[in-house]
Length: 293
Image (cartoon, rainbow, N blue to C red):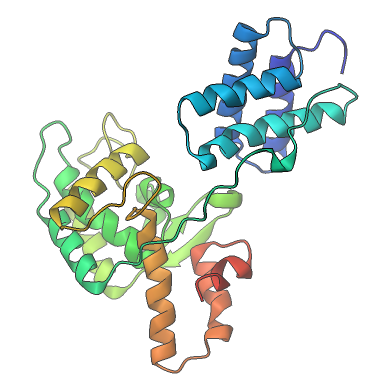
């Protein structure tokens, strides 16, 4: 790299390289853009992270009372940028690995059968909203799909109409975590739900999203979470507050646990079935699936 390379140039090159080898690097790119703007304001002329700028960046985050997990999220891309510059002969401060507190591991909320029944009953009571005309149709099917297929919320919200094969009863999940695609067969009962929903909703949204939001866009994660929190409250399922359950993602956790329980109950060889579950969930490692045991 030449002497005239700015931090913004370095960030652009790093992001391009990451994406060229298959990483999405979207959230990381946003963090780096914020870090660059912070340095431009607080440390004019700085072309590489130094100890003062990195510590000031983290101190500003601490003043906002962010969680340890968020602090790690803000630090990791900056650390990667410093390493990337260092490999190219540019001196840069690499934050030591143990410099930040480790976030406590989240303990998933495993919904009971009664809680699931109460939650889905409340989604069925979702009312028509003129500002979001399809909300009352989307919500009951969206959350059932997340649970019954063990999907990540982002995978469900980004389903396009063409990704839902109602003839075969299969969902095509595209560019999921790790940039992987996979096919997810659905149960018979969910197949009926999806077919009925398709007949009522698809074609009315003006967009190609299976679960549309507004103005032809997919639902946002914030919108999904806002609705979910309302359904939790209506179902009398307590929420533990910031950093605690119950969450939308816990539907995926519950799907896995309930499958394992069912296999044990029926005497199936769980060890032999774990790779099947791994593929269905889109896990990159069998250890990610075995965690649920």
